Image (cartoon, rainbow, N blue to C red):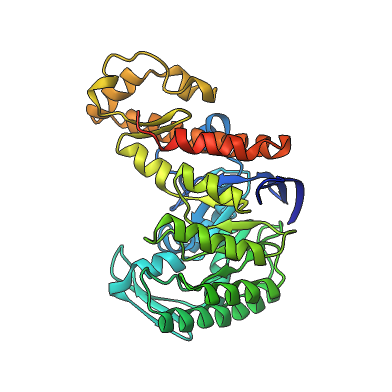
Length: 376
């Protein structure tokens, strides 16, 4: 994997870059649609390419390991062949899912034992095992196995957890470096910064992660319930330490406003389930603000969902028609809304990139933050 910086904003820390993988080039800043179980919910791969214009999608190690299982994915020739997506894929390590199973898992030095949410069967995830699983899934970018601490979290727990995450990272790197990909293309490994909301821990973790000199780095353990200002503060602390010549990935973030502020702080990569999850509940993000499609005010609004985005989905269907589908609980409503929200997110980061390269990012960002946070 290679990363080249194409431009840096003079008034902020925003960057425009290019990540080159064996499955194609990713222009940053980028938003990555989340395909937890090998599918971005309610969206065909063709729509991801043509309407959404996604450049990379996510798969989830925990979910794919349980269903369909590694034997099925390996027999298909990896996740790219299994789901028909021929652009880059990133897999998260399952650490976040294991953290969210707090009632049915035990964390020890060797790894995490947990019960499957599918059938209650017992499993263990170790740093070495998670590397092997991600090798089999065949992601272009693999994530190190870490513990994601909850918020709030006491200092001593956060410190011990972070130190274990660092020990696990050493084991991840050793296993990754001792193995090869299975499908004839290269894979890369990103470590994850932890440290909860404690500045000294975040600094120490960022310095430790940077010392491993991997090809990219991630920031984890944020957007788990802490105030947005706290998330921005710790993102900035970490971005100032992580190397400038490598991509930075802020995991699980977030709203359009979060993404714009994250870009201004020097983040290159984002992911979140919000665009598709909110779409299924009738909430649309647009270039002019937020729409609740259940509201009566859209009943007779026959204008396009968002003409500014271009593409088929957001310009062909009207607000009135989409409202009708959503209030009637038609599956097509969830599908159109999901494609639209993802299209908007990808449009937003593409516009941000243009503004960074043009030297007009900060003024544009400040205007867009006002727009994307207002409810229409």
